Length: 122
Image (cartoon, rainbow, N blue to C red; front, side):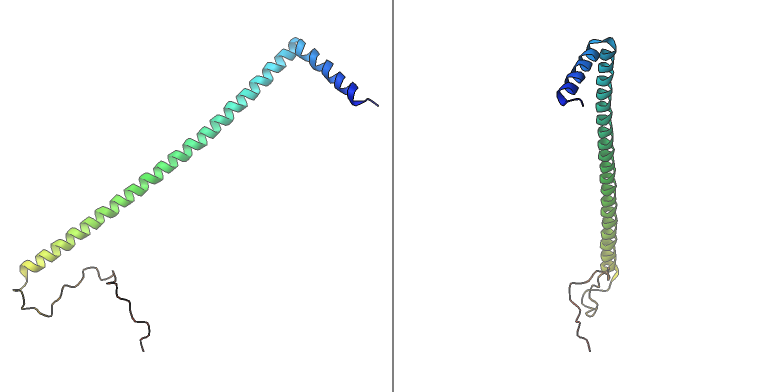
């Protein structure tokens, strides 16, 4: 049986022969190029994924901003409408004090006034 030392020396002699021959040099260059290309490829993949993710994030932010702006515009319109409603009410209503029972009712009844409804109603 071959001992480890002989195997190692055999491998070493083979390697030196390969490196010294033209084929060995070509093999080494090819190997180096392949490794280099793989490295570049992986880098480009990583870059691609990263830029894709960043773009997605940007789009999401833009969508969110648009949504907020639309909500603000809607709120502004609602407020303007509310104000207009109030003014027109005052303009055409009878003189003050003639409607003692008429209190300003909230326009948006869906918004709770903050009072907690009693839960123990019999």
